[in-house]
Length: 231
Image 1 (cartoon, rainbow, N blue to C red):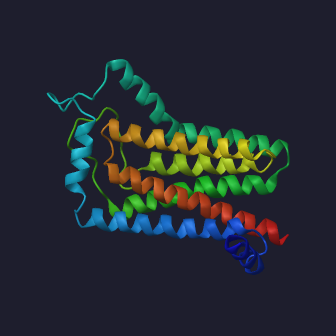
Image 2: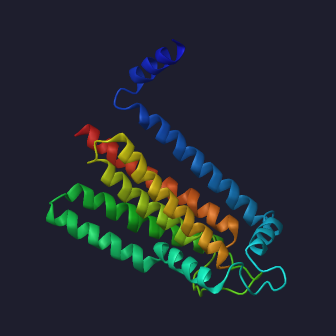
Image 3: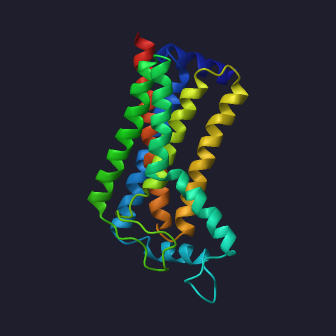
């Protein structure tokens, strides 16, 4: 069949692993989308839709109040903490200590490169774009850094996806690997939505955060896998 012939040709030119090609294409697409979003934000093209979406999460009669009851707001705050620098740092440190006990030094380098490198990348981008936080609604959480891109969204994608990839390497079941990676993506998705609900980020901040976070996670995985294949 045509598909089988195409697969054989891909294997011929990419004998190490077909998935490398798709990961590379995914990285290019994610980076392209981030650049497009950043360009639109810089030119002010997203201001109207950003504010409209923010208001969807607010009470119609009083934009100072979020939709849902007080209990729901507490739940959202708990969810957003999953992407905080404090929680992610604790998780990364615990994983690094565990890997140190197992003498998995390459995995330690991978985790630290992904997490620390991702954090630096996000802060550099925040400094470059220097976008102010939303003023459409009163914040339900205080923040000190710039708005674009969303650090919580980006770093939750980087850390959780990188750890999911690390776990999936020792998991033989394909269904289990899919579940682990899907769970990581869902957590990142929920964290991003929580940032919009709390009024601390524009939707485009979150979207850009997902794009750059996934790009960096895939980039680190691609480099690590390439080095491992050569050894």
